[in-house]
Length: 297
Image (cartoon, rainbow, N blue to C red; front, side, top):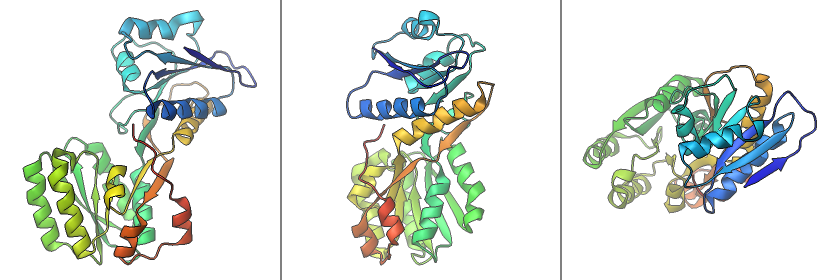
């Protein structure tokens, strides 16, 4: 399947996006990213779908078919990234997107699906003016994420207490310590990805019960938690992520650039019932920003 999108202006080469064959609702997410790239690139553009059963050879043929080499390539999804990283590298400009990894976890430039933690901190500060500290639970493998949070927290005049975890017994023990000492007037809790996944059926209800009883603001990197009672989370606006990618390709002039970037296209999902429970008076601007949750990749 090939989607061709003619664009005004023709630089020396075609921007080629390779995206995965997936089922709904994820198909729509990738379609939006492709549309966002197409809106931003200046020149001819083509998107090629990689079959779910594709091999490394199939991927290579997608890259080289019809003389596609010479322009920039945008790899969408983990499978395309994996194939590319295992092949001999070329001088062709390559960008990556549609992957939930952090800056520093690939050498390729591009835009991650991971929302910039700065957006979380700014939103916490906006909702909780008396906030002084955020206790952040994170998977012990996600060092780049917590390092970024510690670096930017002083900009929001917030302290950070990082809590690395690697299994359900450790999380349960550390949660007990946290809830016995936390000051709900000045401290919020933030759960990074996969932290409660070690035993969701036990850990999540415990956190929610403690948070509601003690009136503690709890946010998460998992939007499903917000539906069940956490205060808020952010998820990627996929069209805007695609536009960020397209702008990066265009602005680079197809010259070598480095570094994966956090996406700034974070969409807020908010539990207003929880906000009322915590006594948070939501500004109209916050309510207007919140949208129904879009399925996660």
